[in-house]
Image 1 (cartoon, rainbow, N blue to C red):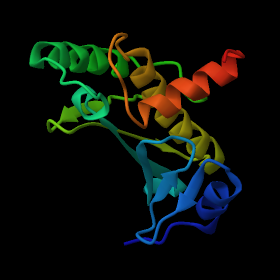
Image 2: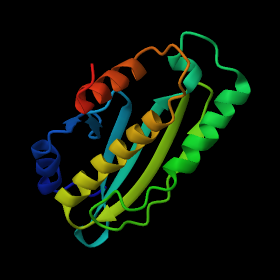
Image 3: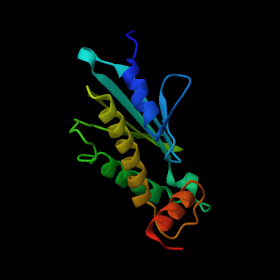
Image 4: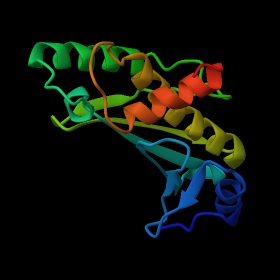
Length: 163
């Protein structure tokens, strides 16, 4: 296997959104969700950025039980919104996210290749942020939420200047 160029490690190190994991992947530190980017050497000096973001299913972050039909509808809406990811990256990548759920988490996977490692790191971060934002948009009023949803709602309120 070809070694990852130092320029890629430098790009991740200089970016404040990621920390390196022992397995060589980079974890997002700006989201309460599990957002991971795995850079892989590709042809002609390009780097493949494999992105995985896991978010909890609605029933995992509410005090009360969510009816199965509500959770199914929530997941379907989340999936439809996530796959409409066009325009969030600096470079136009042919992103085709795959969304899967296991009853506990919904996992979004996407990948792209870029010659510019810094732009690639920025774009990977943008994908993770997009998934988080899409999740927040799907929060259904009327439920008592737990972390990390309460954190996200509080952060959004603080950013908007509300108390």
